[in-house]
Image (tube, rainbow, N blue to C red; front, side, top):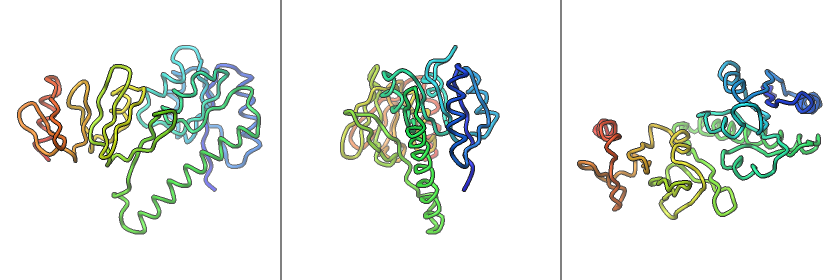
Amino acid sequence: MKEIRCLIADDELLARNVIKSHIELIGNLQVVAECKTGTEVYHTISDHQTDLVFLDIKMPGISGIELLRTLKNPPGVIITTAYSEFAVEGYELNVIDYLLKPISFERFLKAVNKFRLLTNTLVLQQEKNLLSGTLNELQPFIYVKTERKMVKILFSDILYIEGLKDYVKIETTDQQHITYSTLTYFQDRLPDNRFIRIHRSFIVNLACISSFSGGVVMINTVPISIGRTYLKKVKTILSKL
């Protein structure tokens, strides 16, 4: 079984020691680093191969939530905190689990097993596609918090995404999803070869552009203006389609 490389991020020594003691009771987990601040976590992830981060929310400097928003391709994250009010925001950032201190071993083990299950499912899906010769056709997706539940949305189903101040509207082929987030958050997590930001308020699916002219693209029958600051880049990309 492949060893899971873990990073513990908490400014309290006692909290870090509790997590380490739990890890020692579980097979195939290795602590590669310990961090006391969000800044340390950011640099450590860049310097060490990390599979799973046990991340406290309130640390000196940048918080755990702020850190997650800065990472484009974060490893798996399990939040460990004494504050329950950040749970919804944590799940909107696609964390694996949310553990409230004091953390029992049973609850800790459940979170780790959830990470293992998600990882094994992805590996099995990739192997399946490799065997069938369709790895490049693997359907990626994103989970979005809407109407008090996490909804799985395939990238291929997204027509466009519109920023509405503190909220974002995701228009798909069959419905709309409203979530508390920012357009930048989605821009950082959507693949550049499939989506493009054409306006400060819009990201569109390149495959869903039915036509374009001047400063407007058509998504099916919906016209969306291209922002002036995005115009040159958008025209360059569209000319290559």
